Image (cartoon, rainbow, N blue to C red; front, side):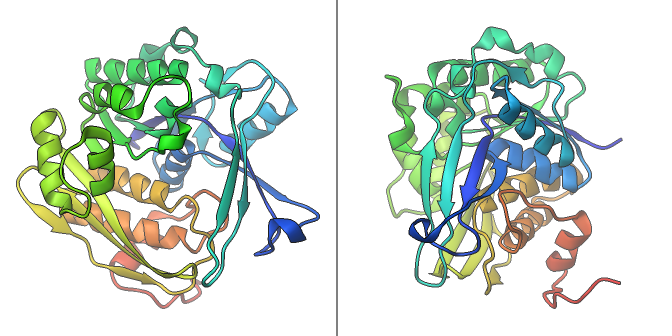
Length: 334
């Protein structure tokens, strides 16, 4: 039976000027839908897993369009909640060569930001699941979203379901009277697999040093929260907006391992690459017997997302394992 993943978080409408044009040049926008957690679920769906996403959409045509997008891309939407009128959105101007991408968010007051814990029956949602995934963006959106996320994590703990959290957040998102330092520790201490960076560990928990080693910070985090089994991250080297290098890394409580570094010489779309890495590590840990294979799978999945337009990594297991095996030719598959 395929492994089953449940994800939880906001899904937004993404509006981008066609190609690599700037906002000031645009007379139209291309529309897709995406959100960090849903991107992970969809990517795992393309990898052959069963996946379902829990979110809250406005009860209008835009909410229905976003729901249809998730269904089209292998995600179950049976537990989507509907209410209020606004869908969160963001505008993306894609960078090229030495010009960086630019993102502008419009999500305050969205239907998801108004979610409350009583709106979701987590025991029912998580029935039969193998894994639950959350990110640090969700608890930053609103107190209701944070409480709902914590309830999901604790329910998964009680049901014996593995929990992963991509905990890196953005300080300027926390606008409802709580800080990440107040909210995140309770969520992280109940999480099994943590995806983060040295900076994230320092900013949220005050552990380690900025510019210090990832493994030393990861050790401190696992000492503080013994439930954590693995701390996973990636190193990105930006040669330019169009040329990137990616390498996964992991501290598993006993040893520090690194994946093979992959060179991406022609970036098509960088958005969602972190989510592709997260989906890769989830798939890898569920399907491989050793952490190194899982980490190499995640790194290859992340690298491939740079070649896919939109927020979501629509690649197959065969695409990923081919790159893991060293096939960088891009030959036509016949």
